[in-house]
Amino acid sequence: MPGPHAARRERLRAALATSGAEAVLVTRLVNLRYLTGFSGSNGALLLTPEEVWLSTDGRYTEQAEAEAPDIERERSVSCGPSLVARAAAGGVRRLAYEAHEVTVEELGVLAVAGEGLELVALGHVVEELRTVKDDGEVELLRAACAVGDRALADLLPLVRPGLTERQVAGLLEGLMRDHGSEGLSFETIAATGAHSAIPHHTPTDAVVRAGDLLKLDFGAVVGGYHSDMTRTFLVATAPAAWQQEVYDVVRAAQQAGRDAAVSGVGTSSVDRAARSVIEAAGLGDRFVHGLGHGVGLEIHEAPMLGASAAGILRAGTPVTVEPGIYLPGRGGVRIEDTLVVRDGVPDLLTQSPRQLLVLG
Ligand code: ZN
Ligand code: ZN
Image (cartoon, rainbow, N blue to C red; front, side, top):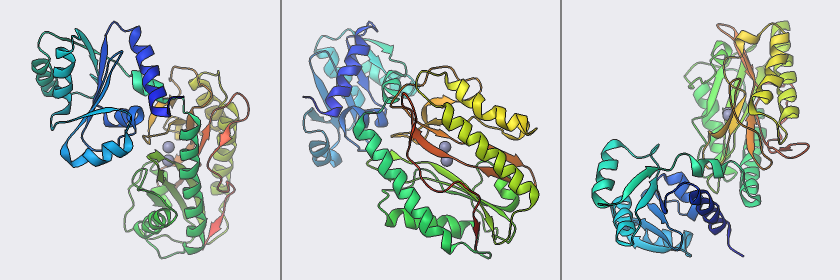
């Protein structure tokens, strides 16, 4: 039985068979990792009906051998042009390449390297393959989400008035590393008070104060796979009526979105399920972004769950569900979970409590 990476390459070959190209050059590093396991910062893959070649430079020789032992490897500093030349020498006439990744300048170099060979755009074929995860990928995502859950549980007793947003973010990042995260999914968002109304706030030296809404959006990385979770808390006092009201609406919308995320439904209908709850509360214009996104080797990947998103959710696709309500100058609430779409009840990967907790 082929390993997961070989199985993915077979799916790419099958997709390629309908494109008119005889072979494909993969230069997008995250797609290279998906198809081979190789995670270095310089490399390219050539996939023909019979052959597969991985090119990387001398810094990564050992790593490539360890991560992609089943693939023919060559050493080059200019991986893409080297493999295009190899394809041309091997008789390939039409070669698909990742036009969404290659710069105009790089395309010129590829064209020179593959004289006589026609370069055609592949499209987002590999990204499309990546949307449905295999069991091994789901387990890495589950592990990454568990790291986030544990780090948050450790953080909550430490949060108190007087800490800055940067200190809170730093504590959380350290805890994720302690629990085994390879890095950060993205720059941690810690937003307190009025800053919580800014959907993607960058932490500042603003101080957490009693009565603030404190919004934390963060993620861990395990085996290259990213977790993503948002929770919003109240600091040191019982919630004001407006804070509790906004929180309850977001929580109900988030539950409706999670309930709607089953295989076979349109991605926009999941957004609609959550958005209609917020609209019914008269706050539709304060939910200023899409409901969620796919997550995997990248923190944001296909499919997008938005009001105008096209496409159908398929079983095995991890997505986030993250409605928010943002009241400028006052504060905002977002609740975000990562789940895997199934035929029935979704597989919820992030487990941290969703009720409004008072910290400090
Ligand atoms: Zn997030
Ligand atoms: Zn997200």
